[in-house]
Length: 71
Image 1 (cartoon, rainbow, N blue to C red):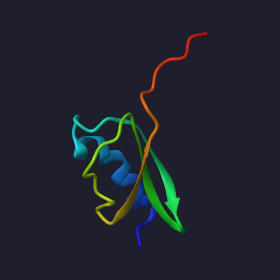
Image 2 (cartoon, rainbow, N blue to C red; image 1 turned 120 degrees about the vertical axis):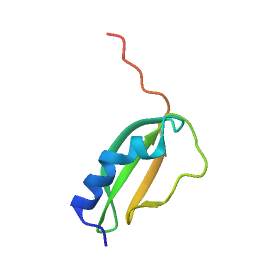
Image 3 (tube, rainbow, N blue to C red; image 1 turned 60 degrees about the vertical axis):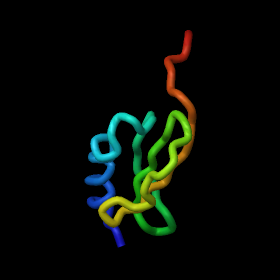
Image 4 (tube, rainbow, N blue to C red; image 1 turned 90 degrees about the vertical axis):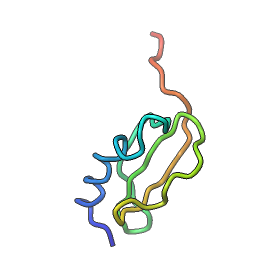
């Protein structure tokens, strides 16, 4: 079972591990059951991403592009 420290370490490495071709718009922490996990928000669908990295579950959600709101 992954610890919160493991999840934080993986969170810090997600963007560099996946590379610039993956449309990541945000990375955070979540839980899968009682286990800490990393949540990756994607700007567009992307195939072939791992379900776990270094023993930590990764949850993906396609949220679309992030842009500044007009006031």
